[in-house]
Image 1 (cartoon, rainbow, N blue to C red):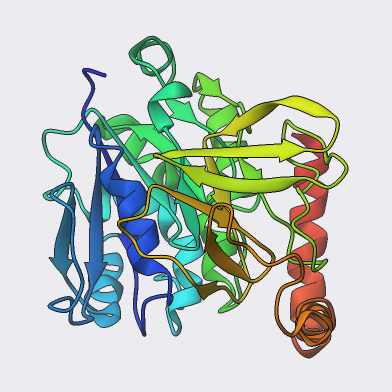
Image 2 (cartoon, helix red, strand yellow):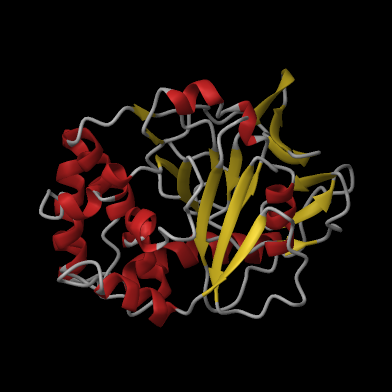
Length: 316
């Protein structure tokens, strides 16, 4: 691939316990750089050549936002960064100089071979790639970088995101609407394995291209994310696997070439247990914890936001 692409990844607090596995999957995608924006000490972590640390705190990002927009986002927690993602093109303008595209990704994932799914031809003919916040790319030009600010008063836009300290999914629904209003050429191909946190089994969310298959199993093999299933001779390849809100134990060495991704852990391929340890407890924690978390987060403010977001999503 001839295009230069950078993924901006702010991270604060403590890295996931499988962060080194994530970095290994980044390393094998050498055409893509990751700008790791953090104030966490990284001396004990092996950082691949295509991962570049940008030393900033959450407060530093808050200050940068305040210098850009009159009504700053209520960036009280790192989770609210979800609503800052569309601003990264201007927030990190200096760091992104020289890149043809910039984007954002999450750390609770493993990349497959991204170049199997994103080519120079696709980048040449589109301004924005994908909609879901765990991986989005934008053409790195001033007009597109400024869209979030220019259309600040659009439905579920920046003004809406700034109205609450809660997550408003501006990176997904709000920017999907702005891209439509601005006439951007958008490429949408959800060829990823987005694993739903609602159930304990590794189950693809409805947004994925692929459907769930009987007794499906997921692997990371030499830089590719693949799925096998009973009764199917060919493996399905994915751009990445996203393991949101899921506790994972690490039973592999980062130098190993193939890992199986199980419900709550990574194991060498061929060495995964038939039944993971503490399976019943883990299922209760995963499924019950997800529902309990939703109940704890219930508020009239969240109902207001959800109603507006769902209404706009239905119209896109």
